[in-house]
Image (cartoon, rainbow, N blue to C red; front, top):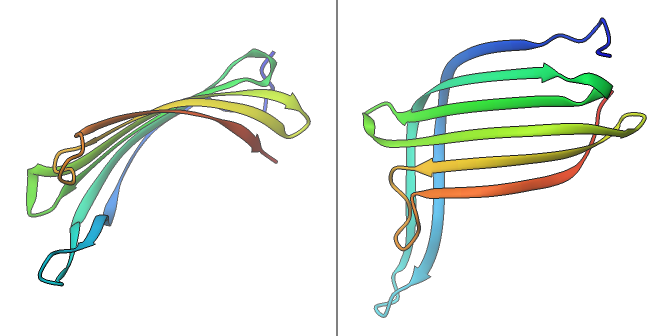
Length: 125
């Protein structure tokens, strides 16, 4: 049974932001300090949903697209998160999730796409 005071939802958000990515710093043979940095102003487009399942479990999903204002299709981040929370006792829940991150301009020597498995405990009230 899903409690009467819980709500399933789907929503869209838009806003402004600034992305700052500092990857690696090193000193070259000439003694210069070099850092691989990417930063830009962005317009954030985000979609989220949450669906309440029986026994207090919750499924959620969030997608965010963060393009550079001056290079909308050439420099951007995309994040896609899905998670499931399962109640353990009282306000404590187990949380399992997958996150996929795509960076169109990654640091040298890294991949554009990263996939993460997340597991942890969450406290809600």
